[in-house]
Structures are given as structure tokens and as C-alpha cells.
Image 1 (spheres, one colour):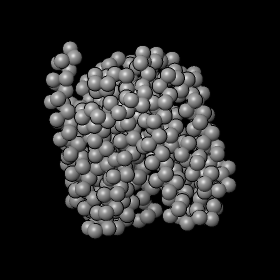
Image 2: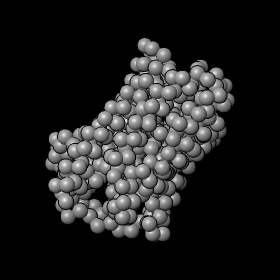
Image 3: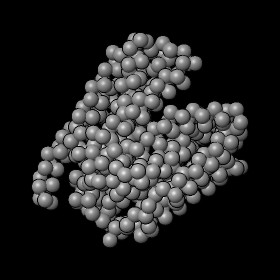
Image 4: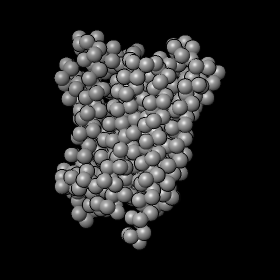
Length: 394
């Protein structure tokens, strides 16, 4: 991989860091936001769910509408809108304006990752696609390690509006980085359209891949959503230790993401069979590991390593698969997969919540394990089908 490609991927990762920070930092600022805007915390919580819904619905639609815009120019437009959205968040006088700003940033978030994934794969040889996407996604994983804790700290001590000013500044840095480092990428000869969305959704192979993403990512969030109360109530850690434990988790996430990218270089779904199998086993093991305070450190490391390992693989796979099945819709396929990530988060968190409500915290482990095992089965089926598909195309 050339130095020029590495610089471009690093620029995309800087933008991903800013975007990842703005998505998750609101979690730690909800009480402060609710108090300042004089709304219930439950209403403030819709700033999170509203973000996810806007991202899931808006990403493929906006990608279809903007298919003719040159990709580098579009990335710059998206980072500009992202910066404006966060600046609007910082000065929002009401809940309604703050929600509007969150919707703007959510849509730019989803479309940026969809287009950036395609740009990343165009920067490198075909056998380096997984690594390229994992480098881009590193910005998102570093955001969970550094950006969110720092953003929360700033918001708690200097006010939540200051946090969004900082994120808007990060957006400007990302914009400048993309201007300087990302080269122009040739547009597809047939830009995507709304019809392509229908073609993708009707294609069983594409649907299988999207289900694989949603179930695999959701399996992690079934237990991760409740990791803090599990560590406090089951493992026996004090609340003051949680930040350090989550830092360890975040470092493991970053390592797992890069490792997953290397595994996905040759044939993404071939590697995903093993990734999802190991993920399923690791999630199930939490039933026995987490009740032990000493072994729970191992739990955190294993959960972190497997949390994002599948991300580069599923994103590279959906791009490769759409090139074979619906070539004109590669951008939209990438966008739909970003939506599938967030749908998976919603499904996993919801199932985890129902499990905690009717069973116990530890039962979220086997629920997540079943979801990951389902993704493993889909990966096995997809790999067998790919043998026929790629033989025909060759």
C-alpha cells in the first residue's frame, strides 16, 4: 500500500473519529442536556434513538439521490454539513432545534461512512480492501476510547454545548485533511438510483449479507449495552473503576478492528465464518467468566477484541458482492450495510433489555451468542454460494 493511500485513509479516519464521537458522546451528557433544556431525561434519550433512526433511513436514500456528485467533493460536502450540524447543536435554544441538528449529523454520518468505504477500497489493490476499511474504521474505534470519555468530561465541566463546539472543530480538521490527502475518485459509469435500492432489497444474496451484519453486530450489543451494570452488580467492581475497564475494552476494540481487516483481505466472507464462530463462543463464555472479578478482565479483553473484528469484513464483502450482482448500486449497498449496523445495534439492545427485564443480566450472553451463531451460519451459506457465483463471473 502506497504512502499516498495511507495518508488518504488516515484523513478518512480523522473524520471517522469526529463522527464517532458525536454519535456516542450524547449518552454521557443526557442529564446535563435535559436539565439545561428543561425536559425529562427520557425525552432527551430520544436524541439517541432519533439519531439512529435518521441514520438508518436517511443513509441509503441520500446516497441514491447524490450518486452523480464526485466522491471527493461529496465527502467534503458531508464534512461541511457535519460541522454545521454540530455547531447548530452547540447553540440550540430548544429540544426541537437540537433534534434537527442531530438528524443532520446522523445522515451525514451514515452517508460519509458509506461513501468513504467505497473510496477506501478504490485506494488500494483488491487484496487489501479489508485492511483499508479497517484503517478508516479505526477512527470510529478510537472515538470510543478517547473521544467519548473526553467529550463527556468536557461537557460535564464546561457545559454540553462546549462539547459540540469541540466536535465541530474536529469536523473542520477532518474537512481540511480530506481536502489535502484524498485524491479524486472516478465515479461509476452508471450512478445509483432509487431503482437500485429495490434491486438490492430484492436480491436474496444481498439481503443475506445485510442480515449477517445486523445479527453479528447486534450480538455484541445485546451484552455491551448492559456491560456497566454487569461489571458493577455481577463482577463486583466499583463505579469508579468502570472508566478504566471501558478504556481497556476500547483498546481491545481498536486492535480487533485492525486484525479483522487483515483477515478480510483475501475473501471477506471466508474469514467471517471463523470470526462469527469465535464471537459466538466468546459471548457464551461470559456466563462463566463475568461472575469472577479476576476473570472478568479476560472477559473485557475478549469482548473488545471481537466487538469490531467483523466490521471491515462485512463492509468489504457487501461492496464486493454488489460489484458482482448489482454493479451500479455499489454505493447504495455500502450505505445499506451502514444502516444494517445501526439496525443491529437497535435489535441487540432491545433483545438485551427484554432479557434483563424477564431473566438476568448474564442471560444477555447466550442471547448475543445465538445472534452471532446465526451470522456464522449465514457466512457459511454465503461462502458456498460465492464459489458458484465467482466461478460463473470468471
